[in-house]
Image 1 (cartoon, rainbow, N blue to C red):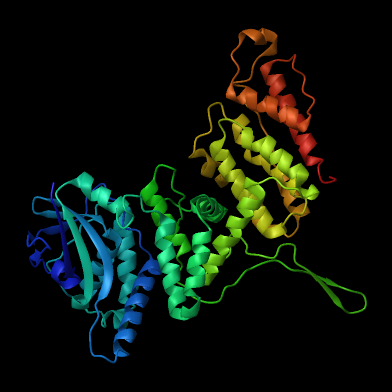
Image 2: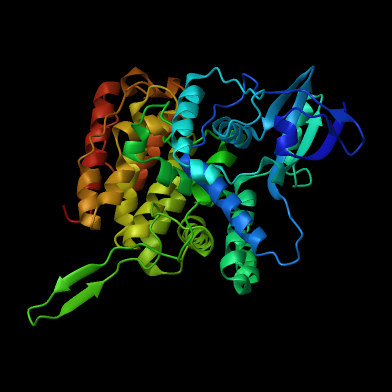
Length: 486
């Protein structure tokens, strides 16, 4: 195994010039996209961000008074040398985009990057059409001023290891590590005297991976988004837990917005008009809304800080506050102790944060129980265990997160949740008539037993499986829908 590192311009790489590495080894070959690589998915959002970065660079260069020209750095590119091919392992989206720009500028006519996936071909056509409308802006791009760092290895495994551990000393590079630099850079440009403050604020958040994943679910699991065609480039897909590379991309796309601006917190204000002509204003929650648009810099950092604090307050700690005692007992004694429900708990936690971001602590214990009935319905409606991929499928048919988001009051939200019809599949339930002591308990039956105890339900054990399932569904639904005075 050999590894070569070289610094070069994009013009050198695209024109297929021989590039000399730091070890004085020549690097040459044809750029190629391996078939197993993910599709080309950059949209106008990412491209506009790149063009804006280059425009900012050009402005800085014009304002430079010492006459020295600093290159525009596009980042590192990781390549796997396979014969005369240079397979792109990392940098595919950037290089493809720059190749499209070169095509429109009629430069590097020998350059060819081939995509076989229809999704990639469709996105390339779309981006070419969009870029054609930016022709004046493209004419200012100088490929010889754009520098990159090449990391080339003849081992495919080593190439992916470099991708996953670059700049982290052997620790897997995660989305938050990438967006930290982006936001601090934005702050440094707009209010440099605050850079240290926000850097320290970021560090004080400690491990923000869990809250970022919860926020992604709350933002991505939106009805209209889930209903989009899988090939639609604007569809936001929540990666599964083992898809770490795709998770990095999702975090960067969602939490490093191209827009810059003020630290804006969206929220709902209730205005009551009084008989004397005056007004009374009430804001149930002073903070950010989970699904609100974000600006780069202070806005996103403070947004993450806010939801990290909510997660620590409501989901990680018990309280001395008596008003939260009922919620604490329910969440920590039942929800956190359920087995075989990890994927459902992720949805439940996201739904709680969405509710709290809109209504604060108003009737939180009741909200938690009504949300629980809907979310954990998957535990009893399935014949088999709850799979990770079944959660977004459930939300596609039962958009409960949208019910919360569109509600103006807790009562309106409760009404929507109460309309949900709970069905229980009898498979996995112990049949009391057939000597239950001789039957092995199931995860479903254990779940039902815990729910019956927690909610003090009245369910007749001496019944067939089908009768028992229906009794449980009816008793559970009746109990929960009566909460809150309905």
